Structure formats: C-alpha cells, structure tokens
Image (cartoon, rainbow, N blue to C red; front, side, top):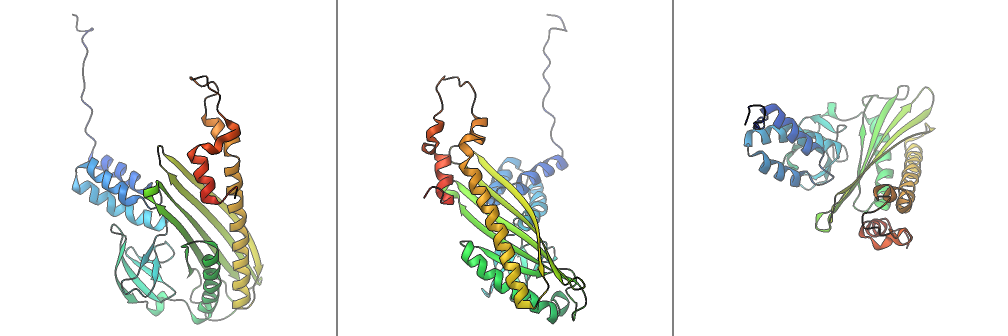
Length: 310
C-alpha cells in the first residue's frame, strides 16, 4: 500500500482553558428559566475540572440571575429582594426599596446571606420616594390580581435625589411571574420592565415597556419559547396617587394586549408553525390530522396552561 493510500488519524485537539470557560459560560447563561442549577450540575460533570467550572459559574450566575430577575427571600424573612441591574449596588449587594434594606447575595447558591439597612445615599429623596411608593402600591395590587405568584418592585433610577418639583426623574417598574414545574417537564417565566420618566417641564410621564416571555417544555422533546415585545405610552404628570393609577392602567393595558396576542398565536400553531415543522411528503405517506391537532400533547398542554378553549 502506498503512502498516499494510507489513512492518517489525528486526535482531536484539547480545548484550551479559555475555550472551556467560554463554552461553560454560554451553557449556564442560556439556561431556560429556573433551570440553571440543573444545567450547572451537568456542565460540572462534563468539564471534570473544578477550576474551570468555578470560574465559569462566578461569571455566569450573576448575569443569569440579573437577566431573569430572580426573587430571593431576605434572611430575616422581612421581605424579598429582586436581583436586577436596577437594584444592584455592588456585584453582591442588592437593594429592596420596599423595606429600605440591602441584601448580600450568593449568586451561585441563589440565596441571601445577610442584610443591612440601606444608607441615605442608596435611597431616593422624600419627594421621589412619594411617587415611588404610590406606583409600588398600585403595581403590587395589579400583579397580585393578574399574575399567580407574581412579584414586582419599583426602583428609583435617574434623578433619585431630586428634592422638589422642577426637575426630571425616572422610576423603573419590574414584574416577574415564574412557573417552575420540572416534575411536569415545564418551566417558564414572564418578565417585564417599564421605564417611567417624569418630565416636569412638559408635565408628562413617558413609559417605555419591554416584555419577555420564556418557556421550556421538554417531555419527550425539547421545545423552547423566547418571545419579546416593546411598547411606548404616556400620561399626564399629576399627583403621586393619580400618576400611580395612570401608570398602572397603562401597564395593565399593554401587558394584557400582549398576552392576548400570544394566546392568539398559539391558536394558530396548527396552521402555521407545526405545518412548517412537518415534512410536506412524510416518509410514512400518512397524512397528518390537521383537523384534530389537540390530540397531540404539546398543543393540548399549551392550550390547557393558557386556558384556551375552555
């Protein structure tokens, strides 16, 4: 046999430390809602390198926790703290404006280790706090009615130290509703962020909303939903209570409208998405029963979760 005919075998190159780190981080950061601990366990087993895993976890968990706006119970059980970029004071410290406390968070364990009173610099002025409290009260009532097990918080963002009328300031409303049911092969979350800008000169309140819905259904398969929507609206700059009521009504309107559009898209799944996934000419030469798609577990379970067809 000539040299040209001889087959040469090459062993795969060993990944560098940096490559392993980046791959591990990608898997952790892109974990579905409520599943990062499960993914972390598998990543750690595959890596078989404690140093790489710990480095990846130290970078990925804070990003994941903030993007998913996880809610953790304070150690003294006096309330909850949401881990968001808006509540972040340092990498491990997060403000709960409702109790005026700062929680120290262990990102990898997803728990609060201790709590301290917030300083004056970390809290808004009395003038801004009056508006923040009013909005927080209205949003809390709305979330309690609209989202089972939903949580929310309202943060002072720009201009939080404004002492009196005459200057602009901004509040940020964050809403989280999660349903984690791994035993039923289904996890999901609703996240919405509303930037509420109070413009004193124009006597107007501008709202910019961003809604994100993530879901993972993995019984006998692996189906994920990642939907996003943005919107804008405005209302008049009024007293704290009147502003809060108007802001809540605007948020309720847009979120309800978006949820209805999602439900409508699910109703159209058999005629659109599922047809695109199905081979035009199946190998079995058996026609797909488009007239009775509810017999299949995915459409049946999605419709059941959303209460469609009741």
